[in-house]
Image (cartoon, rainbow, N blue to C red; front, side, top):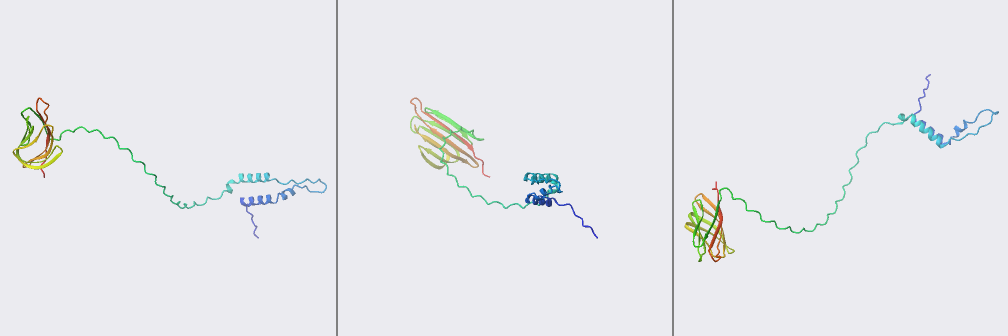
Length: 233
């Protein structure tokens, strides 16, 4: 015959038995406290209190903590992504700011490479050289009578120019030859931008001229420059 071997009760079974004991109010345990024999005085059984039961369970947990811990379960799946939040309302448009102050005019930069400065002033009844630009010569003549100031350009080729005089602009293209002139009278102002061209030589010409008579001498100043233009290709 085979003997039946009884294993050690599991922690869960023991906890269940303790709970059953508590549910029965501890009557079984109280009955064991009654002494046997008719000749001896009977001792009144005291019921087990809830505090005593809790103490017993706590002691069991302390002694068998490692046995009561179950195996770690597998990691749960990632939760679904939350719903996208609503788009916030667009804020009100801010008011237009005030216009800033106008900046100061910058200084005139240096002339480019190869530029020729043209500065002269004829006084009284005389002719003064303004400058030489490539094959062209430029002079200014001052005269007490009209025309009071005359700028003369001499040389080969032609002059394509835009002339502004007394707020009126005129564009022309003329042969230079023995002399192409620009004239102003007292109190007038003239600004000319043009191109001097002869063969493969080209200069951009910028000139401003005026004239005045303060009562002692006629004055005819001229300022400007001439900038060489590289040949195409």
